[in-house]
Structures are given as structure tokens and as C-alpha cells.
Image 1 (cartoon, one colour):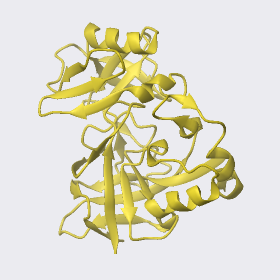
Image 2 (image 1 turned 90 degrees about the vertical axis):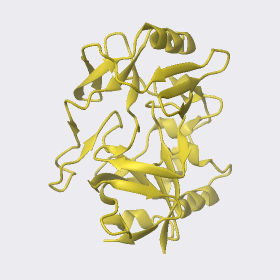
Image 3 (image 1 turned 90 degrees about the horizontal axis):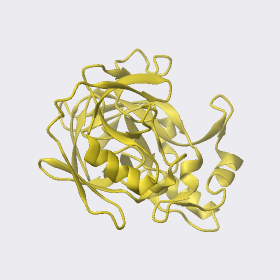
Amino acid sequence: MIRVASLFVYPVKSCAGIELQRAQVTPRGLRFDREWMVVTPAGRFLTQREAPRLALVKTALSDDALLLGAGHLPPLSVPLARAQAAPREVLVWNDTVLAFDEGDVAASWFSRHLERPVRLVRFDDSRPRPTAPEWSQGLDGRSAFADGYPVLVLARASLDDLNQRLTVPLPLDRFRPNVLLDGCGPYFEDTLSALEDEDVNGVKLRIVKACARCSITTTDQATATTQGDEPIRTLRSYRWDAKLRGVTFGQNAIVERTGWLETSASLRVV
């Protein structure tokens, strides 16, 4: 029986995530996932690749605010009510999308933490961001500020298998999944075409593309420091994908049917 072991949402791109017991799945992924992003003053996205200290920003969600914390800085509260300011264009990878600037207080807070001028922006749903059509199997895939796809699926057994190959095991937070699966073997996610909740009209996720891994996996999320070249070096020895020109770990999915997911929920392979 395939089960949902854990659910995670990452409200601010490249910042720490939140483990949930229950999550609403929208057309562009788990609600609030990668809905905010830190950008340069010119509007180009930043991630841990260029700004590893983003890993140290802790996130939480209350009924009316996104709550942020980082080291010595006072906590920051960003209202969930959308800003009234006009949207601006920002760049995430090769996509130009609309976003609302969250104002000078949030910009100052992140600028102090990263020690460089930045702004915090929020995704504007008035201009949907489609997933790459060549991988979306004819479906209307959408995402917010995720790298390319709205949901990342990983089997717990895959991490266990990788850790058996490493000298020093790595925690799950290096890989930032949204849906962690139990009840299946290592790399079971590679064999899937789709998963759906066993409840009638429940969530359905379409598996569309292997997740090619980058240097963020080598960054200790507790210290924001790079820890050598693992797990990339070990993954390269048995998870190299010539077509994607990278090592893969986990599978990207798009949302075929919305709804709610809960931990321990049973999933059907379709």
C-alpha cells in the first residue's frame, strides 16, 4: 500500500519548508508553495545557488500571515491578504511572470539577512505560469516560483538507499520534496505515470519528468555551508541521466486533479 508519509510546503523559494499534516492541492501545487520569492532590485530570482543564507530563513503560516525568522533579526510578518500595489514583472529562470512587491519592510529584512539589496515578491495568479509543454503530456500544468513543476515526489526508500551509499547520511531537507511516499521500494517513483488519492474525486498527480539535481543538495540547510560534493558525486555513479545531462533524484509532477492530501492517506497507482 502506497501511503503519504509526509507533506512539505516551501512558501519562499529556497527558504526553509514547513511539514504539514494536511495540505490543499491547487492547480499549481500545494497551497502557498513557492508563492514568494526573493529577487534582485532588477527582478531576477535568487536561490541558495547564489545566496545560500536563504536556507537559514525559517517559515511558518498563521491564519493571516507568512511568518519569517532568521538568526538575530526580529521576526517578520507578511500579511496573506494580497498587496494592493500594481504587479511588476520578475524573472524566474527563463520565465517572465507577474508578481506583487511585498514592500520596503520585507525588502529591508531580507537585505539585512543576505547582506545585499533584494526585494520580496509574491506570485500574481492573473498570469499563469505554464509548465514546459514538451514534458506536460498535453495537460494544463502550472507552477508559481518552483523551478519548473509544482510538485516533487520522492520515496522514503530512495533516500534510505542513497544514504546507504554515502559515508555520511544526509537529511531529507537536502532534497526538498513536497510529497514523501512510504510503502514502496527505492526509486519506485521512477516507475509511475500517475498517483491518485483513493478517495473518490481525490487529488491526482501526473508524473512528468525526473528531477535533475543541482548544487543546493550539497548545502547544509542548518548552516548554509557547502559540504563537499555529496550527494552529487555518489548520485553520478548510478543516477546519471544522459538526456537531462544531470543526476536525478525524485520525480516532478503536475496537478491533474485538485483537492486535499493528508499524511497516511493511501494512494493508488494509475
